[in-house]
Amino acid sequence: MKYDFDSVINRRGTGSLKWDVKENELPMWVADMDFRTAPEITEAIEKRVLHGVYGYSVMPEEWYDAYTSWWKDRHGLEMERDGLIFCTGVVPAISSAVRKLTTPAEKVLIQTPVYNIFFNSILNNGRQVEECPLRYENGVYDVDFEELEEKLSDPQITLMILCNPHNPVGKIWDRNALAKIGALCAKYSVTVLSDEIHCDITDPDCAYVPFASVNEECAGISVTAIAPTKAFNLAGLQTAAVYIKDKKLRHKMWRGLNTDEVAEPNAFAVTAAVAAFTKGGEWLDELREYLFENKRIVREFLENELPQVRLTPSQATYLLWLDCGAVTDRSKALAEFIRSETGLFLSHGEQYGGNGNRFLRLNIACPKQVLKDGLSRLKTGIVRFGK
Image (cartoon, rainbow, N blue to C red; front, side, top):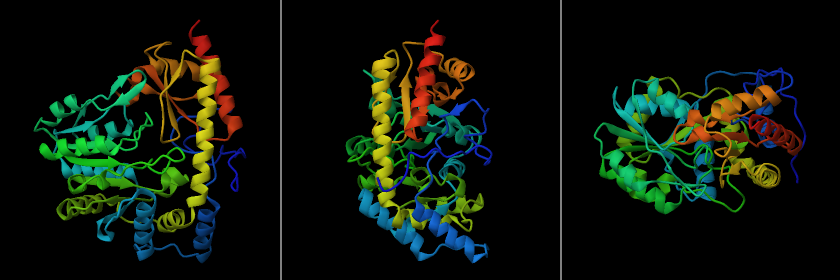
């Protein structure tokens, strides 16, 4: 490989949320990679740093060009330049959408188990969570369209937050499923906010389908939240965007983001995003290969060393969803036990809703020697928990 993903980088003492743990602990929870970003991005940021003046920023044409070219070339979505709006992050965009596109006490639908911060964005803004659990059969998740339609028919539901690809289950929704979701939401006048932050972290030769690319109906009712932050490990730079094709819906989101003051870039947000989307492709492809190999290591380890834990099939993200139902249906207690006994810090599934009470989420975006240490600790913790 041209790029180095094997070196272990000491992140302690750097103000890292992930690594703000005890000396003996190994954090493999929050969606934050332990790899340095692409050197091409670092070089671009260094050049910006050396300029020495970090005043207010505007959005240059190169930012629009970087996004539109990347999504056209990588994902087959031709975005209109005017449909893009900068924002400081996908979560701020989701919270702004909840506030602007719904009214207090209305319901927002989510497909659980799903990214736990969706709950925060809904509840913290005085709206109600409407869970539509994914169907789970033979270790595979799918949409229960009958229940989805029943839920969407409730006039109190005016917004659906779609996770595409899905975190934590690692599912890439196919075009047919997305078209059905779009048709149902259009039928019941429900806007779709599609969180596509994990879209670039797919298995090699696997492609995701942007919701807005499915058909005109999906494009017309949706807000798509996108960013380079997960794929290139740039979350701390607070750089993202939303894409909205429909002009009236776009105006609402533009007003919402500006009212919430999350539509202005910091001095490095534009530089990093442009470098990622114009120079980071080769690095990203090697990262995807590395993560795919890490998935293989986990799968074989569980099959050979820990068969009571089942790996959910994953085509996207670096977050693996581990079915521990044969061990316990109290995943929070299990995660706490594993951490106290071994120092391995995982995310418990209960916070994701649905059937998450039987799952743990494992972040595998780390060097292989760190991953193997984590798997050894996982086995120790599971075995001790069962005694």
